[in-house]
View 1 (cartoon, rainbow, N blue to C red):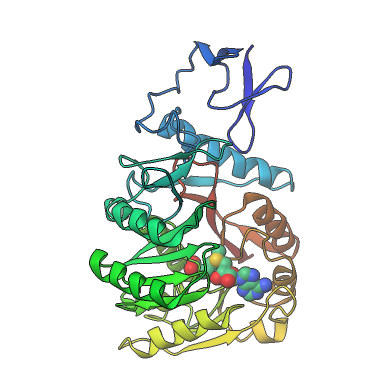
View 2 (cartoon, rainbow, N blue to C red; view 1 turned 60 degrees about the vertical axis):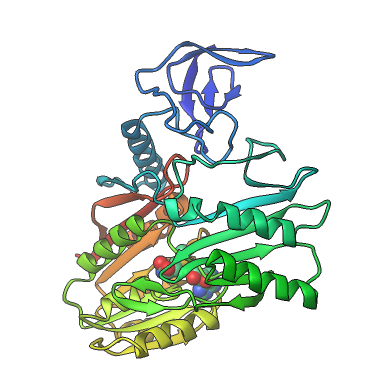
Amino acid sequence: MKIQSLTHTGLGRAEDGTMVPRTLPLEEVEVTDDGVRIVSPSADRVSPPCRHYKSCGGCAMQHASDAFVAAWKASTVERALSAQGIEATIAGTITSPIKSRRRAKLAGRRTKKGTLVGFHARASDTLVEVPDCQLLAPELIATLPALNALTALAASRKAEVAMTVSLSVDGPDIHIQTEKELTTDLRVDLAQWANEYGIARLVWVDEPVVTIHPPRQDFGGSLVVPPPGAFLQATKHGEKALQDAVSAIVGDADKVVDLFAGSGTFTLPLARKASVHAVEGVREMMDALDRGWRSTGGLHRVSVETRDLFRRPLLPDELNEFDAIVIDPPRAGAEAQVAEIAESKVATVAMVSCNPVTFARDARTLIDAGFALGPVTVVDQFRWSHHTEVVAAFTRK
Ligand SMILES: C[S@@+](CC[C@H](N)C(=O)[O-])C[C@H]1O[C@@H](n2cnc3c(N)ncnc32)[C@H](O)[C@@H]1O
């Protein structure tokens, strides 16, 4: 059968509607009981750079060239915009280098022989170890022995544990989800484990059980200790690309509001030139941002506000205090907040989004209110996955 197109999750779609993973448009393929045979490969097919790709489900697009993936991600953005009747220029795709992911979620399990830590195989419970993973930063790969030792301590006999590892200035910041009960003895063992492996902090479900060094993140020269579970851009490279794009859009604005501000990824670098009001739903992130601002010299004023922007968006009168708006909502987008921006007099909006569909919906609202959409930059910090991040300027004509 012939593959016609790719679904938005990267599956090949054949003429008869069959979905065939890891195939590319125009390829002739044969699906047998033993798997998929590529009869005539696409010119965009490459040999996967990672030796784990065959078994590991962590990546979806390693069989395609970087140029193909970049063009495909750009086309998903164009399609989402065109479904809203918006014609946009794609400025380009900025792809994070291999081995640059500084945050990842791995699974761990106890086995008869010891422990297993890795990613799940495609659509399966099987765990695949990934010592030569091409996605993760070397410092993250270096935590695998620590994660195995943690799994031995923290996994029950039956269930898996999920471990989110974020690299920080002070070492790995690890968050574990497990069913196992936290006892006094276990706390002592965990402290010893963290010491032995140079772990900055361990958060057990929602309790920071060990903090050897508060794990700081560097946002444009300001150091912030994000609370457990806080959002963090997936690669430093992607974060920098987004910060540079946002800063170019905001330009010389004196007063900026940063909506869905997280722990200050955009707020703190912007505060080098402008006063910034940061708004975010999680109080602990606002407190962390505030402490980061207070401990950095030479910044303009930063104020913080904990507020649910879905239910209580900033109103036009509040927005009109500012010269520019930065908005970086979660996947659901920012429908309610964008409706208020449309009613405001603010002329510059920098929008960052990890969901092209809600981005396009919110873009429609702004365009209908008289904004023009500038070139859209795709920032691909989710290399070899189907995820796509964008940043763009909206300016009033
Ligand atoms: C994509 S993250 C961006 C964070 C930040 N701009 C950054 O780059 O690190 C979205 C943020 O929106 C926050 N958020 C989610 N729903 C919210 C809501 N209803 N009101 C306010 N903030 C919300 C999340 O806590 C998260 O920090």
